[in-house]
Image 1 (cartoon, rainbow, N blue to C red):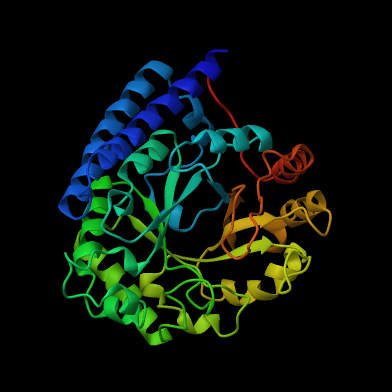
Image 2: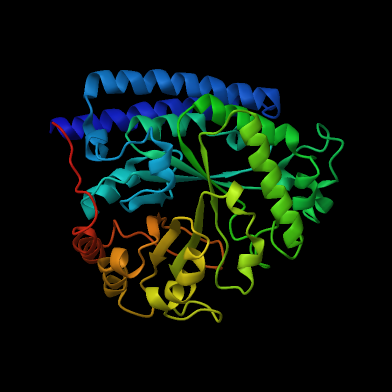
Length: 386
């Protein structure tokens, strides 16, 4: 009962800090530029106060389950010996209770919690200090998938930018030439103020010609590479050396390796492994080994730890429980370069399909039990102090 009370208190405290930002945003019709950054900083300050109060009254709680991981050691986070499990939950950033439920179901505490953040002028486009602080205070490391949606910047404020309808054309080239330095520098400064390790997965699946505007339908691979390097360089110049950079191509397409920005600006190599089953003409039921196995050797050849940044299977077309069990039971032995795996725990994904699809395993008791059993031999157990 006391443990449940602590979890409830944690959720309320985190939600209060997040709600503060949304409340201020809703009260103002001018949420771009300096005001947006100010809202983000104000929310982070309130969130930090709430987090400290929670820690004082609730004790170590969840963080005790991650005592085995020295998060202050960047070398460990860049090249861990253990597999760092993590997740994205569809209720983020409004709530972390989905993460807590997943952990309860699979019997471990997740070292990495993933957020998604788009580019733009509004408060929701600023560096997520509130949630990053909350994740850190709970014992995990935040990971931000940072998506360069260039049309969300106000043309009236940024007269040097092309009009919205023309912005995606060679947008990565514009980033490389410095057109978005005003925004990149704000993020870099905020990341430096966070002052603790944070993973950033920038412009993922950049070689996919259908899904995202930063793909090859709008940009050359040279523009992508130069844009990536400019961002990393500016972050480091701003003192944001606490950022760990994740390069994440879509390995189902050919020549993805040609987009590699170079070992000096990449810390991890990642990809997604999502089994859609036969829900569309372009998909069918694939095993984990069929999706990932043929690409593993090349992913590992870069000499960086490998991350599976989006991991999951739908339930249509095959035995989902067996899919997870087969993928996870021998993962460390079969694919030793894989040092992180993040569950894609969302129930309303509509990224590439007309219908909403459900990737969640926390609501699937049989699959959750299978996952817990498969990872038990190699994942640190979930321990929480009373």
